[in-house]
Length: 356
Image (cartoon, rainbow, N blue to C red; front, side, top):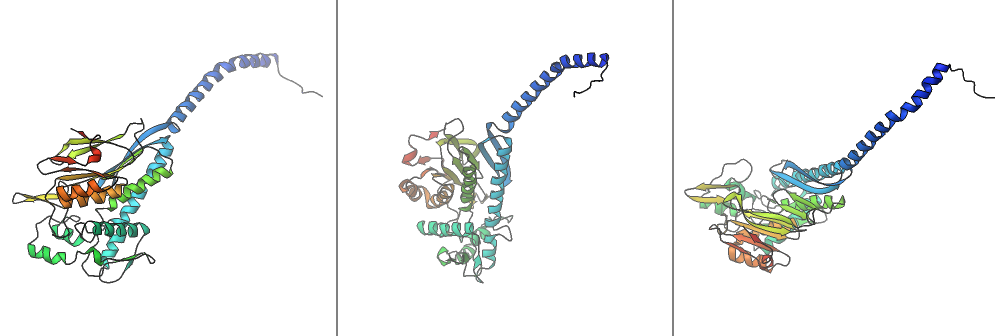
């Protein structure tokens, strides 16, 4: 048996015409499909450098990294910014149900169980407090509040009697940590934990960990503190500008860096002037007064958390003791700027720093 063809001669002619015309339509269509596929692969799967920004931790965080395509980059971006926001909700004492806010709320009442991140950073902060001789103290919150540097309070210069009274509530050695229960306890009512001088660096380091886990090899994270992964995508070091503490539009130096954390403590943030004297939020926990001998300190370290806390400590210690601390610390470098804009820097930056 065979298939019976009942087509008319006219149908056969039309079929032959369609047969020869088909390539005329198919080939351009195939070219369009291939072009679209090439464009799609270049757009969504090619290795490119992506830059994103996001408002978080009272600043505009910037994220720059290489990824294979838009979709992969957006997934990484979302995970990084979500982690930053998650950690901010643990550390910020201005968020009522944060771990730190709960610790402060129950000061003199009971220990508070906290997240592993908050427990770890609190423990590290106490170690740095000990190392600094107490000039850096994570229980400085009552003093910060007294000066009006917390939240939306009005800045003011407290009376000496107020400072002296408040200093009784600032003592890192009183903080009780229970590693087994993961609790933090402030034993005196009115005490308060303030981890702002160390937690932001830790959060940036955690963002870098997410990038590493995603296979990213070159990245820049700036959330006030800067974390660097590898070099720039072109293989050159990242170029980090150090701002003039008296002019935010001007840079006093540039540092070529790879795989480092960077932070600057300066007298120009959260500052006010009264009777011709400039006051700022970097308080010496031993005197209750702002440290006045430096305009800024920039520290470069292996981790952003270390750079964060050491820049604060060095700023408070001043141009001699602070400089000696950073100079003697392995793997750490610093740039010190006085109120008169005199610049000194540690020996490890001798052949790297580019003064503007």
